[in-house]
Length: 197
Image 1 (spheres, rainbow, N blue to C red):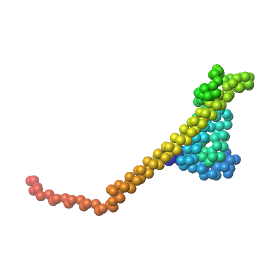
Image 2: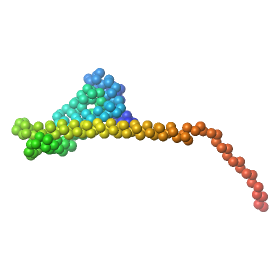
Image 3: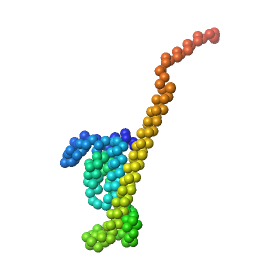
């Protein structure tokens, strides 16, 4: 993981604690794991952030924050990943989740033409909601597990690569050799050609 990049972009715990809008959270934010960048906290944040992004309920940010507080994973990353589901991406994601849900439940697909009214919700919601929730939970769990495993794998790969680079640098004999005195510059030869008249 590009740890230095994330450290530059993410807020630290002191700036969040001094923000007046977040004072109501209080002591929950004082846990250092909520802002710490290590393999466990970042991979858990990716897993639960991606899972929460696919839950088709309002208040995804609050759910992500509660996950992060309860599981002590990186809070800013968890909350940032929720924005995968935004007004542009929700329709295709909802359709994909619905189709996966109908496949899993073995129900025939009905026309997925949502109308945001109480009448439509009372008549069609009972038919559309179970496949939508099932597909959302399955896709959320799959992407969450994939994100968790990918971040852990990338973090480990980078740690092994750095360790190998340090090992190679330590075994390099030219690196460990003591610097010797520099060779003196050769003296300039006196000019022995006769001057021209």
